[in-house]
Image 1: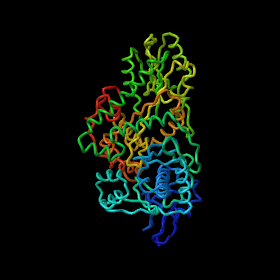
Image 2: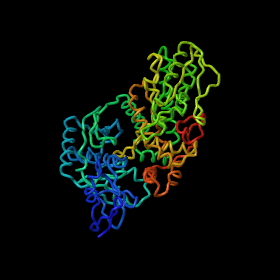
Image 3: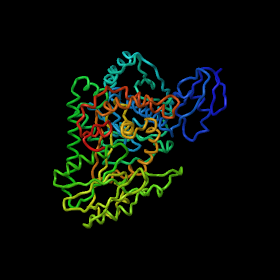
Image 4: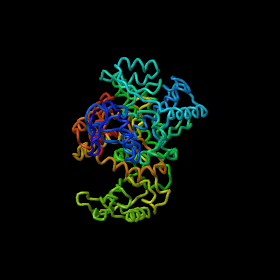
Length: 551
């Protein structure tokens, strides 16, 4: 018998009891489904068994780690169903490309075509597998055996990925007769995946799953067509460059062709910036370029590069930060926890901004403010600004796309741009890289370089930052006139060298330890690239340093 301490109380269990059994006993204490346990601070899957006296905690679908576990298991369930309906070759040629809200877009490769009727059969099979409550098991295979298994099943992406893996063993998950590799934890059986939908969409299919905020309800799918087309175009860039997965990227690094790839990728971004500038120049009456995007999107570098492109069309851009219109900090609204809420629209002097912009549009001279973040107050230098015929204001801030921010300005005078690091690079065909991971690593590196902030501090703030994005940025992204994807296919291989020492500094026992460990494991997949390869105007330099712009 072993003694388990849970919430300060001790319980006795047979040695070898599955954690799933213990979790079921405590499920009624939690609103959401328990997905994982912590054993003396270490995360463990429910399929594992108790081996010694320990202290246990629980992680649910409402936690980020638990939600990701649900998503991973649902993806494996989808692949098993595709195999059962259309064969193993079909399952090996389904790629999980990117997320559109709560939906995961999956495309078909190498000539695979699943029509609407077949996709409906796959969905029905998923439901049958859930009802069967099929066990999900994990086994550590010697690397050579695992690679041979993936080779046999046509999973060439995994063969390429593990060519660069240093460990002698690879964890392979099994669901019935289907084997796959997944980066992260899994649920113990198919019976846990109760909420899902699957339907044909734009030449592929959408796997719709609950989101973390409401893990027990299946949300309505919102197409977000502009975002979808932007992600689709970026994926096409990757295919043109021969880089779909981390294994492909590592291949190019080893072949010595990475320098050319960096230059081509940077040129593709510059071409897109030029296209946006041309569209702005061709639109009559545009005086305000409004740029918004989530944290660590590269808004500052993008603004500089766009301004240069605008100048080639005879326009004279002037940068303005919406942060300069913050209310004095003693008037900042408080959030639900009684802390200053700097993310909300009400933290800005919206009225003054509209008065100033309307006056500039009318040809008047206006004294624009700057915000002193040390004193927490708005300041005026006495310098005035007036818009000449070719002048245009480039305005950056998280509320730039919200019509309430610029309610007094005529629609034709505004050009709205949404920017984000929309990663389309995958670990492999079935393991996508969340765009939030890319941005978080960017921010960890930049905060350490520019603010002296530890990785632990940045990680601790991230959930609050994400809540602000969900509330104040993402709902307005489809209202943009143009979208710009700031993600670079190679950048995680550059960020790796800067992020790893910062993440290793987070010690076991700190609240951010599990997230740091997850990110470190993720970065192991990448071979490193020196930042010396980057052009001086690269968006990546906003984070690693060495930019020719003031960032």
